[in-house]
Amino acid sequence: MAASIGIMDSAYFVGRNEILTWINDRLHLNLSRVEEAASGAVQCQMLDVTFPGVVPMHKVNFDAKNEYDMIQNYKVLQDVFNKLQITKPLEINRLVKGRPLDNLEFLQWLKRFCDSTNGGIMNENYNPVERRSKGGRERSVKGSNKMPKSLQTNNTPPNSSSVGLTKASGPKPANTAQVQALSKELTDLKLSYDHLGKERDFYFSKLRDVELLCQTPEIEDLPIVVAVKKILYATDANESALEDAQEYLNQSLGVKAEVEENGEQEDY
Image 1 (cartoon, rainbow, N blue to C red):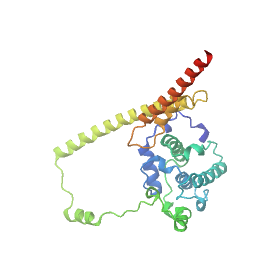
Image 2 (image 1 turned 60 degrees about the vertical axis):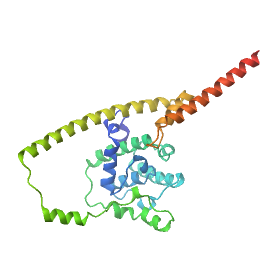
Image 3 (image 1 turned 45 degrees about the vertical axis):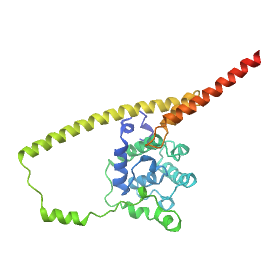
Image 4 (image 1 turned 180 degrees about the horizontal axis):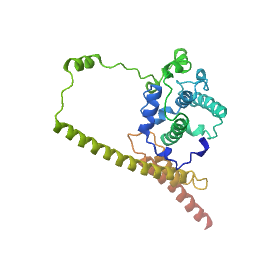
């Protein structure tokens, strides 16, 4: 099954919000960005959910912050791949860099693989927090660094005052006009969501095509290609990487022009 999931499979058109919801719901975590799963710990536990007992969770480090510790997690994941005869290559050197597209693509593949194995149904007897205590939590106690908030258990209790208020006041009955208005609003929201989803998938596929083209060995070191990759792999969502890419391109082209000019002068 793993080898049959091609790059144009519908698995690769699943949005990052759906991926994050899938991870957070099953593992009781608080991830807000796919690159927060770059350490490989989440992927290990997702396979532990799907194949209970196969993953040695005591070797999985949820505190991993540097590339060395992350690589250890991916070694555990590779061993599990070998046990399960999963043939998908693990591009560890790219995943540990925390690039959003690389990590999103791998998590999209992982979701399709897990869903195709268990039908998308989680074992109700599986306790993700207890299983993590066999790995990351022990290291968290021994180590000096705290576990990232995104990889901490999401066990926030409901607001007691809100619960009490709800019980005291009770729901108010809605009249027919309100129901119809809310129904229409819900329908409009669904249509808008579907439209945005299709638009998102369209532009993501274009970005993926550009990324694959930029990885062509014959052109990947050209200044214009390097500048494009700077934009693709920019990790700061609050700032545009266009300015950095233009500066790099101008410098590269300036150096090239200077070299060519010097060469012409030497010919004379």
